[in-house]
Image (tube, rainbow, N blue to C red; front, side, top):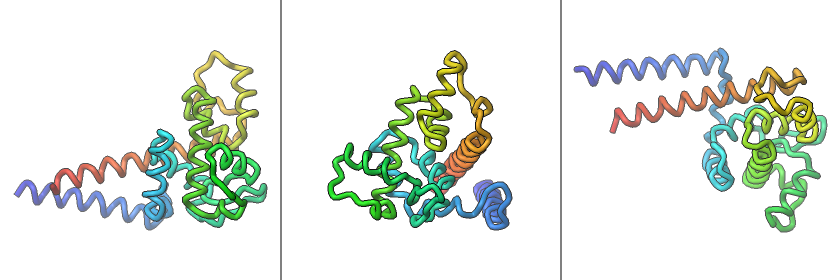
Length: 193
């Protein structure tokens, strides 16, 4: 009897989450799209030691999972890489015969973007907030902010550019949601098995 009641409660919680997703409250339905690229994200995230949910949140912010996305500044693909940056990254990863058109291929784009983000995390001494800000505003810009205030522990509220601050907030918000959904999925899986 208790097991059935518990399953009913879990089912109701899932129904509420689905309802919220469908009407778009604080959590756009497009956050589900990563299922299409989940194995690719997980593979490349593992290769570069990054949480795949963070890469998923980054892709959500950059392209909303539209692999043919092109920005007005010239960035291309799921992780919105500039072609010049992508060519450098492809050379570092020994990707032969790389072309700008390859940036619309999910496997290539996610591999290059995840590698680039891993490099930014390293350059930012493991600070995810600074690495995300660097992905958006450029490492040189963020490094300049850091040089002005090297003793503070950088938080989102310390980011001087409003666009970049909102970008990082959105990624962290999506990342937090994804982690909560993952916990719920694990709990349900544990209870069923």
